[in-house]
Image 1 (cartoon, rainbow, N blue to C red):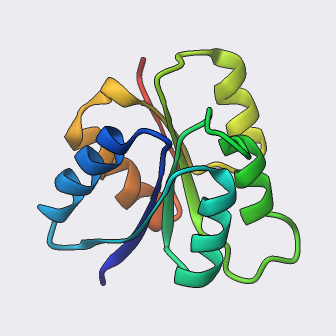
Image 2 (image 1 turned 90 degrees about the vertical axis):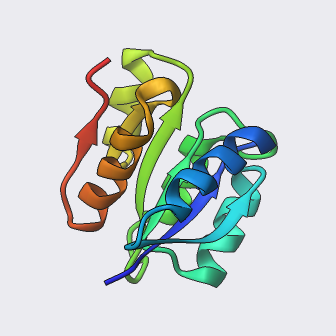
Image 3 (image 1 turned 60 degrees about the horizontal axis):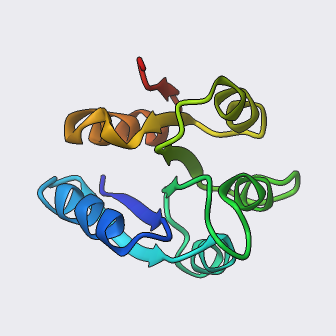
Length: 131
């Protein structure tokens, strides 16, 4: 099974880096890249990814608002969302997990943990960055 992933981050270098890491995996396919939360919701509804990598701070709609939109009650087969951010803040972790995120990673966690978080989310498990 191939895990379909949408990357949502306002920084082009971050999106490109994540895409390169994921392209090296046989079981992961990047199906879109969003520049903000509004774009992430639109692409998720159109492309139906299995997992969304979601930054917290983005223009137009932040990652937590986008997470709520993607996982709202009544949504048929919502994607799993792994929040990926530079902000190591317990409040963000609690809010993201409370809103339905399947994982929380700090951006400098490394490629192996990023891939592990995607695979865990796709299989219904949760992974939170040790940091």
